[in-house]
Amino acid sequence: MKNTNTDKIVVAMSGGVDSSVAAALLKQSGRQVVGISLQLWNYATDSTERFGTCCSLDDLGDARRVADRVGIPFYILNMEKEFKEKVVDYFVSEYLEARTPIPCTLCNQRLKFDHLISRAEGFGYKRVATGHYALIVNDEATGRFTIKRGKDRSRDQSYFLFNLSQEQLSRLEFPLGDTDKKEVRRMAKELGLTVADKAESREICFVPDNDYASFIEQRVSEESFREGNIVNTVGEVLGKHRGYPAFTIGQRKGLNLGGLKEPHYVTAIDPDKNEITVGLKSGLYRREFFANKVNWCLPRQEVFEAQVQIRYLHNGSTARVTPISGERVRVEFLEPQLSITPGQSAVFYLNDCIVGGGWIE
Image 1 (tube, one colour):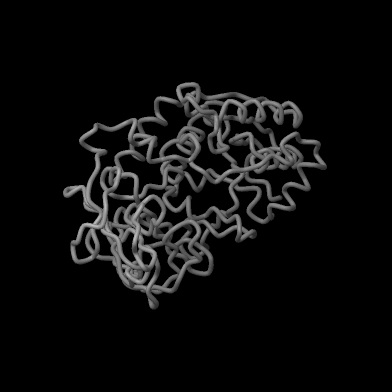
Image 2 (tube, rainbow, N blue to C red):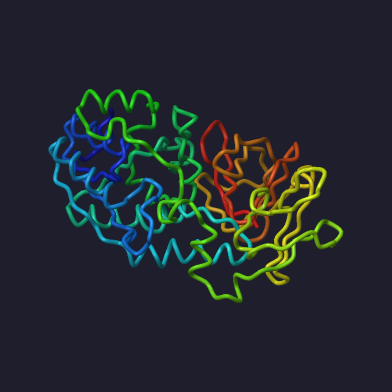
């Protein structure tokens, strides 16, 4: 592992195996390491204890035990207020606008890295590390920083990091970028970390039982979450929905439509009419879309071809990216893609490195 110009580094510890091994590796390399966990959500306010695995009270306990085992100072930073304002409220408001949000991306940009970098400076440390599966690259031609896909493509998390600023990227390290998950678990066992076999979850950390529809319903007015029509592409009423924020483009489950010869999927959501349109899977394919609030890791080009990824589990596909006015771009895929969903991120890659990315309109 390459040392930077300073040996001091703060590592974000979620209580999972990845950040735990990242902390251990940094300590083994001779760095002066401080572990910090973020307390983001008051889980006691919900009636169930089944949450996604990230920053729960149990996770904070696991992080503390790992820090003791590794032999580094450890602190917990309470950020419940900021998390609600910048992540949870955004999550709810996006569904009310018929968009499908990615809370992890906003949490990374607006909360975790900003505050961790600030707290690191309070300790007199300039560097921050996390357990993300990605790599930070300094582009020789431009001197700018960008993010490269991690070695373990099945775990690559670069998609969630496209929105980081140059200042943030210049301070960050991802020690696991050149590793895969199996190797990380093996190292955790060798190090005697109690989290070596800890299960992981890709669910939203603050939503009980991954039931985001009920989570939203409890936090909005009855007028915003009420029964409405489900119609087909010619406007015929096929049934009723419980509330449009409970649905997303491409969704099939929960429609409760009987008597149809073929499966139907959500193809459009109209919050003004409180109406959901459904159709056949073929109606979900599109070739072109617009994205806004684009963040350029590398210098903006006039027109270029890139591999464009439109959701976390999308493999990416070749598209022409054309910057237009302001921070908007038009993206035209060579082949139609399934379920291009407003609110999700579109991230542009060249040679596995992020050129930029924005939010799908």
